[in-house]
Length: 569
Image (cartoon, rainbow, N blue to C red):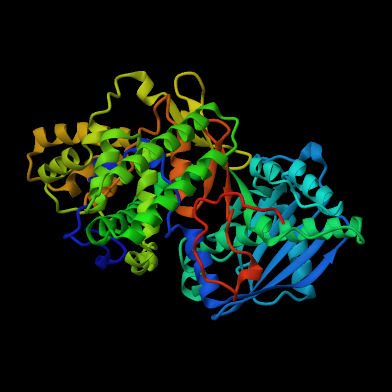
């Protein structure tokens, strides 16, 4: 097997098969789990007691201006610089084509002196139009949920806590619209981050940390504005409600190609998750305490689903069905004295929806964190896609038939199965979808139709074998058919992995990119999905997570399936 760390794989474990795990409809139901990136990050912050403080505050009474956070970790000193402004509500937009935002931020290494602050002041608010330097690690921006932010400030300035019924509908004050890293716009590239900044050497750790501090700033700003309005009457938000406030996120097509363009990394993420699940099925002993913990978690998950607020009718139906299925599962669990968890998962696979099955898997993962802690550092991977030039083409044909049968089973003679092409927009270089047979632009198509390229290469390979024989080398095949070099190298590499490719026809007319978005976001640790269309989704990050003030006071990791606090004050 090809993977980041050979010790991840344990052949004694009973892994779920690739055709089940990598089906796009199942991947589109995944929930965050204990090794999700933001969960891992917060555990590290609490465990290592990072010192995070606001070292510079220059805000007007309405909360506009600049704030610098100083972050001291066991390894380094970082600064987080926030620029907040009064944004005309008429131009506030979550779309990537927006050019102005309520707040813009950067995470950078080292202290920020007056000269550097001026440089950042000139560039960070411009976002893509600005130019960062290699000391900067993340560039981001966020917009207010104006109605929610103003409501919270009004309540606090009146001496009242926000009503939880209102807060439950929109669980954040700000939402991010882009979080850039990995060398964009002159920032430190991933190789520098992972080698020189060990605090952020885990996948997307710096990006998640930026969102964590956007959340903190939103809470700080709301309290400060309220106090400035009525200093003699205003109250601060209680810690219980502050923890319930997350940071919103608007995610669109820009995230979807990543999963298709990084199949080795995605395979690794999936294999780590499946290894943890398989360990629990094998080694997770059932006792009265674990039975009780499971029932408590199940009740919490059902309440979490019940509290998700979305206008999307399909998502409401999915959430209601998952809750109903989980109730059925709980009843069965209480009636039957199981001796191993596989009995519960087998019941779910036979009687419940895929959504409920994956929800159950997350509950099991939450029960046994000690069975997966050694996997936490195995999520990174240096991707290398190597052409095996000396492989006989007969073996290559068999490899495709074995590992890419899902692609060969797609009927590409049906125009619907190739009805979409992906391209990058000229103004923002962001992915867009075009209809192949109705719109121009297919000549600029992104290489995301993996199933199509597999079938095209397989067809030409079969012809080549007829002409040259099965023992001819792959080198000769790709030399004479250079258009298939990329997909051949990819297939040979991915055939060595346990889970291989995501099984999606990304160019089908009815493709649902939102499944790709939810899959990736689940590994980030994002929950409360609110689809706005099949191509973009709003969601909530860090809801229920510890606050900066909790650092040094607690190391508990119990904020899965966040639910509204029992009391408001």
